[in-house]
Image 1: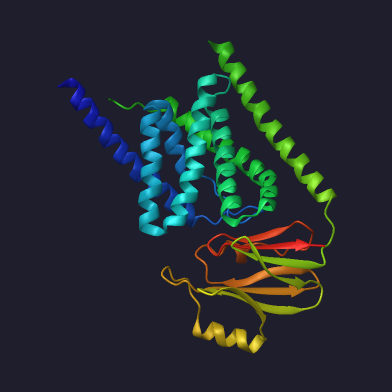
Image 2: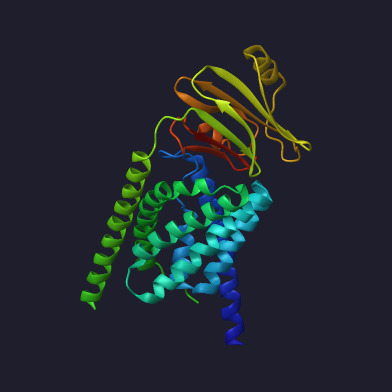
Length: 168
Length: 145
């Protein structure tokens, strides 16, 4: 009986966090910050993924991230956007889990690794889809962007993690 | 406990600075090997469509329908007419349009009917190896020698 209600709570929290992540990525699309290279984003939705990863575990973080991408993909864009986003997200979550287990970095470091992995994953898919290896030279620009946005999101996430409790 | 935390913060900072330094180094090396290019290679879906000479002013239209990609010259008037008809983004349409402009300073995408318009926002390119990518249209514009 106890276990069932815990599961229900977890499901509910995942649902709420998917909604939050969708709102954050919508908010982000309203802020026109495309630094030097167009197409670069802050990755506000990743804030939710990192907090979930730390507080609720890998499974919940994966569900939330996949849920957000598939839902906002169906609602606002199309299948190719979903493929790119999923590639980036999968790569990012795998790297964040591994780096987190290594216990070398704090949340900020994990976030930086995740952001860079996200960019690398998307670029690899792009290079594959376009059948053009030269686009990989963007990686240095995307690496800098990933380090900056990852650090920013990581610092925010560590503040949130410190101050929030999920009562499961 | 405090010391492991401090160690982690230190590792974070090293990671951050290390990544930036590595990427800046990469950029510097790429830039050092670049020189102003003479042609632009237009590639659609992984295949070379055509090569456009850089330097002289020119206005081109790239179109893609079920028969594949084509690139041709277009006059200012023709472009105005096209804009009047409008070629807004349409999710169900398989008709791709990108308007390319060439002048002494390089090549850029003036307009397109793609979903994100990232190719239009991209600044003008002129050095060898630089690219403008339109992901929704599977289009790569690359400056070559």
